[in-house]
Length: 167
Image (cartoon, rainbow, N blue to C red; front, side, top):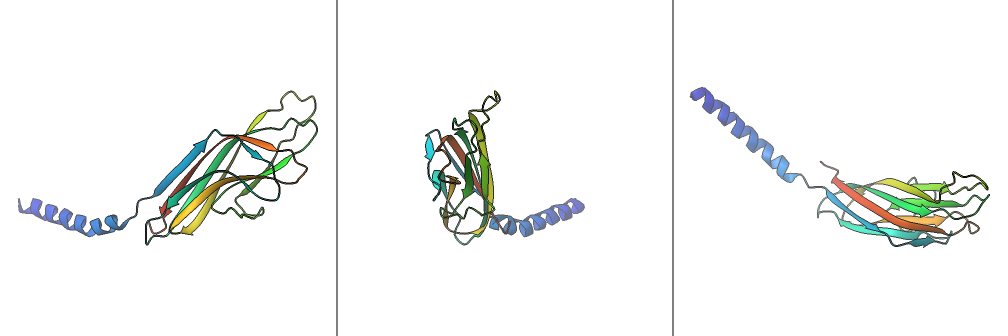
């Protein structure tokens, strides 16, 4: 019986030693949003907000976050043209078009090509480190140039996952 007591004592001691570190771990913050409301991307000089969501990092914590956006775009009917757009997942409404989280895509259509699609899915994921406090995350779109046709975004969904950088 004494041998069992030592095992029990060791397990109890180990659980007490480990418990404080587990109690200090901060749970991840997860949020998201979705919409089926059409948004028209009609400018090249600034970003058009497609969707947003906000998260609050627990007080005293610094988190790393990942935001993912996905949208369905209606391809403009424009045979033999090459319309270009930018798409981004970010926490910055004034994002540079050269930022690593910006994706460029086009809707090239070829006259007479029967495989041209009228819808396309576009997506982006961006890692944003060292955040604290409350942050709003965005799915954004814009035309590359003024001559590009307006683009209709039919629906968008997004999620944000933030984790404690100490965990």
